[in-house]
Length: 221
Image (cartoon, rainbow, N blue to C red):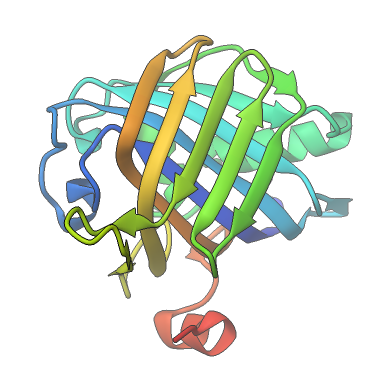
């Protein structure tokens, strides 16, 4: 039976592509494969009567080709503070069950072939969109940080925004320089690779707001 749920919060991703991920513009990954880290912190969320406020969720991933070819491997990392009811709610959401075709978690349910046993651990999730900086850490497993892209000649901070009015993950994201290392199940070491930071709001039908509503709520200069 379908459950009522909503997540609003802060999203981040790291991948092995060059700055300004080509996948988001329908191109092939820079190095042919795609590996990295995705995550979100829930500012406000629920699944039926279970509150999810304040919890963080991460996943490391690997795709041998562009993600739409599938064969993906994913390792979920769940905030250790989640109780049993919250874990059940999060796994229901992450499964893509009862969700509209073409929405984020439903798509991942199709392109992920192998899901590794989840890790329940403390998650550091520091995220500041105004300064375009973030820090993600899971002890003995994952360490990552994001910072503004810099002009290679002047070293001045450079701002680059991805706008996807019909996006399935986010409508608008700040592109930043990502540094991420995983020493756990899916291993990688990424230096000055692509990273995105975005406000998100997801439900069973996908992104909750259309682009106009998103700009009214989160619009930034």
